[in-house]
Length: 435
Length: 173
Image 1 (cartoon, rainbow over the protein chains, first blue to last red):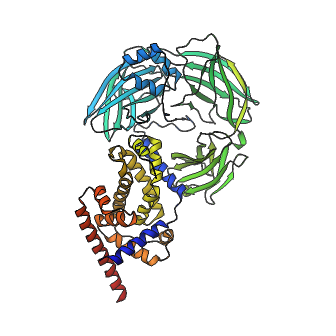
Image 2 (cartoon, helix red, strand yellow; image 1 turned 180 degrees about the vertical axis):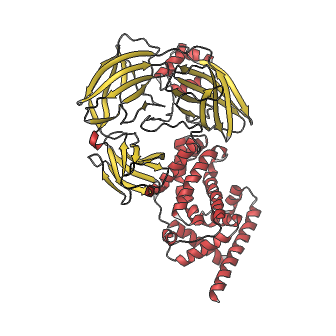
Image 3 (cartoon, rainbow over the protein chains, first blue to last red; image 1 turned 90 degrees about the vertical axis):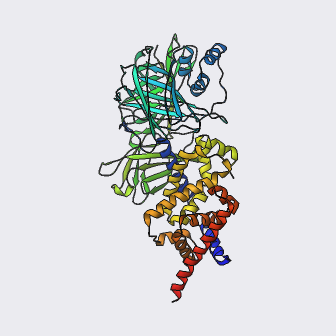
């Protein structure tokens, strides 16, 4: 009855099948949507914004955890506290946090809020004078996953502490089982003096807040004034101080102004004690702050707070580095062309589409950093970025992109992008005694 | 084909699995977007938005085997909203080019006719003819009895024919 119409529709369907499709663009669009969803569309409710040059924050998502080995005593301790097993799973790749729990430094909280059939509980925290790591869980009849957005930790009146950074995640692990627990981390630039807090956040478009207080006094940091200089491949690095907190270790370093290379990332910086026991980089969470142009850089490591070593060394063998005059990328946005990049031609296949710029990064070794730093146009105007993405198709080749708040044709070409990570390393041996 | 276990993991909130799912169905989604929006840029925009919406809502999906059609429905809903915003549909040179069809006139004619249909008719025809779903499957996806879908399909084809004939008539005058 509708033969002719059906045939036309099918023909149209076939013509759609022939539509040329750019897989790259589709992947980029998916990534953008995904990142927006993850970040929550309206971020920075209270305007906490750390520019890239102030803080370079690397966050790695939780990896899958299959099994954890702990001592029988620890296991017994863990089984005594409700929900603790999952907490241990979440932090199992952080020696410092594990030790904090082993040393009974976990504070149980148990405060909760209930709205709309959803109950969210702060189970407990690991806190020190500049950071609060918060473990939470939820209970709901209908909702399996809890997507927390815009989490904020303030004092009871809702006043913000000094500029801090935060990250939060939950439910991303466990193969078949739906976990109903997650963790949030808040770190501040200066010590806080309250013990009464208000945690506020959004979930499913609803606002929630939970007041809680810390009853036990937090342990104060141990500070090592180091002031030693290490050298790798002719580049000098001054290690000024090392601060050991229960949640993490902050290593403060300064690159010598006379260095010929820009030091980008201290990949394998670690603490080693007299027995050879090692505390390495933070696997999930904030790993460093300070951009290439900043004098000081802070690298965060897993904490050895609860371990009192006889001797303690800071060791590193490998730094991501570029010649200073090469540590940037110049792009002609009109011709869609790379005008200048570090030697080696590792950046290829530049694409510009509206507000988004992407290129392929060819690395000889495993490389995970996102290369794009501060971007300026010819007039010196800063291009504010709105999101980043990375996809890997082959080993050692990744497509990396950045989206700016405005379309690229709104800026004066060429633009200059500071490189904050790059697949180029210097190697050597550096060992600084800190205790 | 994407495995059911991956879909299940995606529903439970596994990010890697979610991205795998999106990538597995990206071409289907893109085709739907192009059919509705007829414009490459807008279609990419649509993919981004659908990814966003899907991520926020994936935990509500009960049956993993409905993943594909669930995503396509999100896309169709989004496109319907976009079309309402536009009211009048203009076909640009670029869009014709991006369709890459040999018979541009037919393509335009059909696109135009689709654009004039009501939402339900357009959705039924899209699922049926562009995605090759059977009436039974459409019934499940839209949550209505098969009989209703059959009625809708008949109505849709009727309207579609009327629109095409009206056009043809005008051309012949």
